[in-house]
Length: 137
Length: 129
Image (cartoon, rainbow over all chains, first blue to last red):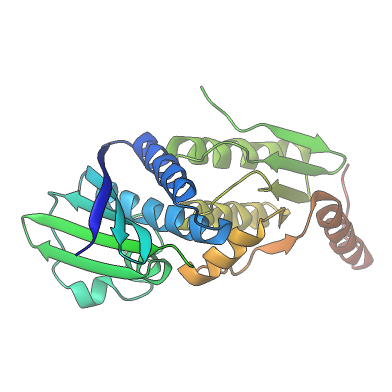
């Protein structure tokens, strides 16, 4: 079990909040010593998931946690919304599937850009997506 | 209201995206740019993203839409200045911007547009300044 070194939460209720989430993730990845490509991947994944939470979940929040796991450190982001949830997770994770304004790359793209990916969704209750990226050493 | 400036450079239009893009700004840019293309009878648009630290699928889609709209108004779009980390991330994200031409910088992008305009001229097309 990884120790949590830092834990903060940010709201996702406007499109301006997506910009703020990107800035927060950028700062945290820099503080963790991520390389430029690693930073860019994590910030982009965060941007996709924040937009999903806003567009499909009607807004929500993101929890940002800096983890320490004996040998390595990483950033875990948990996006939580209380929207309609996802009926068919398998379909939602497929490239090109979209019900919103994006290109349907949000979930599948974020999954590829992170090291770890988990999703829980209950129709009518909401969706929770977790991504973690560990520092390459 | 916040806007992204559009500069006229000879027969082309140059859009430099420097700020972190959000929805309203993107929609305003599509509006402004399509009007400027018609107003100046521009046959080429350069979109400079050298200041952008990330391009997500939202911004990518907006760039693709702009290129499509410009094409319908008889203008070609070249995307210039993409950072290497952005290129790596975009491909991994699954978005390789099909239909959008790219060049490494504004100068090379201009050369590319001049080249395609010459091609059009060859087929007897009017070039308006």
